[in-house]
Length: 351
Image (cartoon, rainbow, N blue to C red):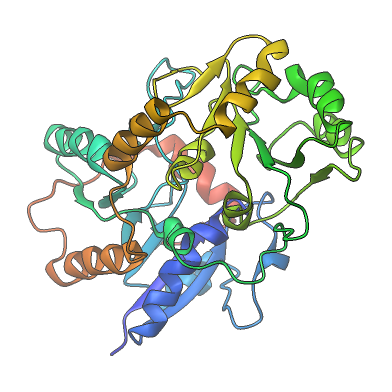
């Protein structure tokens, strides 16, 4: 019997994370359904050939063998082994508890599929400490298309030979660069020197989004999309803050300028003042040899896979756990408060 896999998502960017994995599953003869949690994910992004389960009752009737989650939590009452595939790289963000958010263990997953050596070791240590999940280094499914040829990229303009700058920003008030750089971007976009693409986290303050949309013109385009990969491929340099999307950009061996990055390292060009943006971008476009060497070393640590087959490795790891079960693992802790909140949110009170 074909195995069944549930894509459990709560944000629009999760479509692009899981679709390469869906393709691998279908290629191997498996079945895929999607479950959309909450109001922040738009069902209009589903493709005509993608199957959606609308309720937890439908999910339980379908009985998935594994559940792939690019978020932080998944209800324990959803059937199948729970596989965490992450919604981004470790960008060094500190959560409200003062802890590194990428390594926050919430007791939801049976298996973590890590992206590279820099996070695998830490998760393996946590697996020994907690005892209720396993870890497998696979690479990140979302990166598979990044290493494949780009066809019909809507953000490429072969007639425009100017350098393309992609500005991305996270929504967190303490980390975002967007409100601090609006006047700088306005000034720079009035020049014909560069072509600008702007894309923000979907949770970005709508007032800030409108300010940047107002800057659109012949040199600047504001993009709203569920798939950032074509944008990454189209740009020469990125301007960012502490968003994990910058790590995806670096994997192309392209420079990133960051504004007040929370954890600046030698693979980044980090600045603290808005008046330094233009000079920093100019420097990045020259691709300094020392900087490019630092980027190469960093990429080998965070995601050493460039074969476009991370999805296949995730699927193998999940299938191994489906076959072996949860042998040797402790029971996951029960968080009664989260359990109640999830049942209320999803309108499910059954077993």
